[in-house]
Amino acid sequence: MALSVLDLFSIGIGPSSSHTVGPMRAAKQFTDGLESSGQLAATVRVQAELFGSLGATGRGHGSDKAVVLGLQGQSPETVDTSTADDQVAAAALDAELRIAGHHRVDFNWDEDVVLHRRKSLPAHPNGMTFRALDHTGKVLRERSYYSIGGGFVVDGDASGSDKVVADDTVLPYPFSTADELLAICAREDMSISDVMLGNELVWRSEAELRERLLQIWAVMRECVDNGCAAEGILPGGLNVRRRAPSLFKTLAATDAGLQGSSSADPLLAMEWVNLFALAVNEENAAGGRIVTAPTNGAAGIVPAVLHYYTKFVQGADDDGVVRFLLAAAAVGILFKINASISGAEVGCQGEVGSACSMAAAGLCEVLGGTPEQVENAAEVGIEHNLGLTCDPVGGLVQIPCIERNAIASVKAINAARLALHGDGSHKVSLDKAIKTMRETGADMKIKYKETSRGGLAVNVVEC
Ligand code: SF4
Image (cartoon, rainbow, N blue to C red; front, side):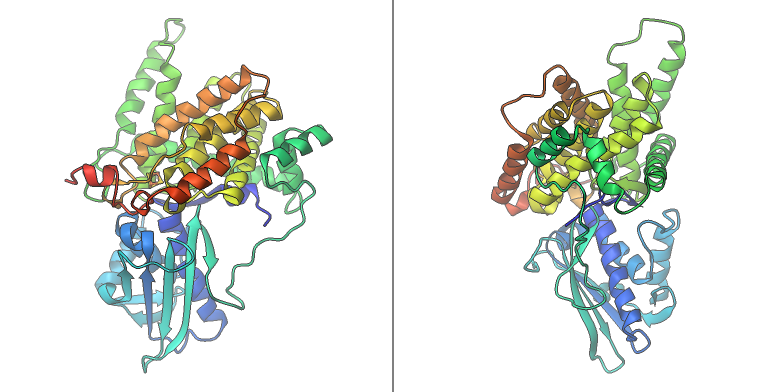
C-alpha cells in the first residue's frame, strides 16, 4: 500500500480522527454509494450503528454528530466548523436528514444512531454499520466500515464502487522499514525528505506538493492563532478551562519585555512549545478546524515542534517546513505499515508516541541531521512513549490528551537534539521500537484502548 505525506497530514475537524473524521467519511461514503447505485430515491430511512470503541466513547468524541453530518454529505475537509453543531441540532429538532445534502428522510436520533457500548464488529475496535430502508422497511443497502486511525476508513464487507481500494502505485523508492529507508538514503545519497519527495512526485508535481504542504502549515498556524484567542470552557461537561489564551498573553508580554535584553529565561522556548500544543489540542477538543497529524488526539505535537522550528531556529524557512513534514511523514508511514496509529488498537503510544517520533524526525532533519541521526531521533521519540495507554476521562479528548501533547512536543525536541549529539549509531533501532509498540499494544487490555473503562478515565471524577 503506497502512502503519501498527504495521507498522514490532512485537514479535518476535531475532536478525533478515528472517532469523528473517520465516521464522517464512512457515513459520506455510504451515502455516496446509495446515490451512485440509484438506491437513494427509494430510501425513506437511514440507520447507523457504532460498535466497540466508537460505541464506548463515541458520544464524547462527537461520533454520532459526525455520522449525521456525513450522511448529509459533509466532509471533514470542507465542513464549516463554526456551523457544524447547528446543522446537527437542526437535524435533531426538525427530525429529518437531507441525505447526500438533498434527499429528505425522517430522522429519530435515539433510534437511528445507536451506540453499542459492549458490542464489537470482528475486524477492528472502531466498527460502524449503515443501513438504508425503503418504505416497506426492506433493507436496500447495508455496509460496515472500520475507522482504523488517522481518519483512514476501510470498507469492511462491501464490494463494487464504494469499496476502498489500497493505493498500489509503484514508487521509485519503496520502503516498509526504517532499515530499508536508510539503505535507500545511503545508496542514492539522499536525505529522508529527498526520498519522500521522490516518491511523492509519482502523484503530483513538486510545485503542487509544496503548495499543499504549505497550505497544511497555514491551517496549523491558524489553528494555533484560534486556540490562543478563544477563551472559556471546553464542551463536553468536564468543565476544562482553555489554558492557551492566558499563557499566550503571559508569554507575549514576556517577549515584549525582553526586547533588546539578554536575560531571557533559558526555558522560555519550552513554554512557547507548551502553548502551541495546548492551543491546537484545545481547538481540537472544541471541534475546530484541525490538521490530523497523524491523528487528532495527537494533532498538537507536529505543529508545536514546527512552530518551535520557525520561531526559534535561525534560518528557518518554508523549504524547511516542507522538508520537516516530508521526513515526519516517512516515519509516520513506518508506524502505519508496521504497527498502528490508532489509540483504539494499541493505546496512546500509537497516537502521541507516533506523533512524537514523527516530530522528532522532522526537526532533526531540518536541523541538519543525517538519515541515521533522523532515524535515531524518531526512535528516541517512540521509545519513551512505549506502553502509554489511552484513557480519556469522560471519553473526551481533553484529559490527559491536551497536556500530553505539550509534554510530548518538548520530548520530541529533546529527542532530536539528543540524536544530533551522536553519530546516528544506537542500540535500539526504530524498527525494533515500532515492533515493540505493536506487541505492547496487542498485550494491552482492552480497557486501556480508547474505551474510557480504565486508567485516568475511571480514577478521575467527572464533574
Ligand atoms: S489518551 Fe491519547 S490515544 Fe487516547 S484519546 Fe487521548 S490522545 Fe488519543
